Length: 450
Image 1 (tube, rainbow, N blue to C red):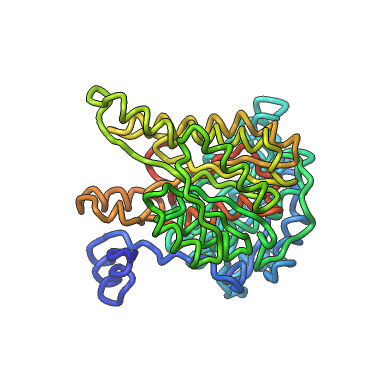
Image 2: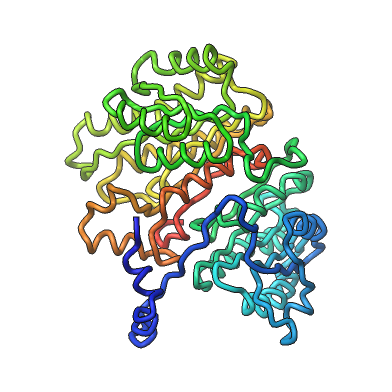
């Protein structure tokens, strides 16, 4: 759906008026297109602290066809060319004094950042620090990243990757995601990696080739977009939704060459029926996307038990039951990926949505608790937490409410269903093996919540 204000603000007349009136001018976001370059310009890589990942980062960029400039050239007036990305390796910082090097590198480099540029900072996890000073320096990267994200304009984003000793092999996948158009609506976020067996490479155009992926709630909206992107990336998609949505579900499955499975995921036998279908029809499954969800909004004091229970059943209990059945049924193929859809409401809360927020917060807790068990199987489980996503549902909101929801983020616009789908597809890729137990917000760095 078109964003009328973003389109107007970037038109000839709109650009002039927004400048004269001091109004925000959201950037037109660079979204992923198959066959397109990773970046629209060269990158510069700098370091603060020991910088043990600088060579790895440079190799990832060059392997992707990106020109890597030295910081001296990038800062000089003679360079002339705008930057597509600024990457700082801050691994090994030992105290706040080390962060001066981060400032000295980032400040001039970010001035050269072009529209839809990317800033990515890598450092060690604060939780594994050996001293308060070291923990302070590492945690400072979080505040630095989030603040840069709020200062950038024209569709540019800033994100962080926390890389513990032993997890270096997992850097390439997250780095490529944060640099690419796949992460257009992911801003001010951090992902902590884990040690894992990460494949050396994957098909850039079809990273999910040969995979079987289940997407629940696939008949419309975000679920249909997830199915589209997964199929585009090479997966055979089993699209799941309730029988009442059978016609729409069949249309989605036919469009992408997938399979439609009508199933009420809250039914007592739903989990077992899904397991049997996957075993008999596909011999197993590689990706499970728990997208199905409902809202039944009311203030808590006015909420009846039916509203509470139905939301918990669809949004949380069904995810628990199906995931456990997949584990027990031994149908998860090696390297399987489970991706659960949470929500910004599960992090920040939302008035009139106590049931929904509680269920979506529960998803985050479930993912975190299950991560070690999945790691033992060589699999992963993660969550995405969408913010304001422009859908048919949000289009029916009152104009004022809709505009406030869309603009209260660093990118000053609502996201699209494809933004959620791209993040889920990335978490489903083989090279995302080092990302486990994480929750990635797809919210344009919403100003609400953490």
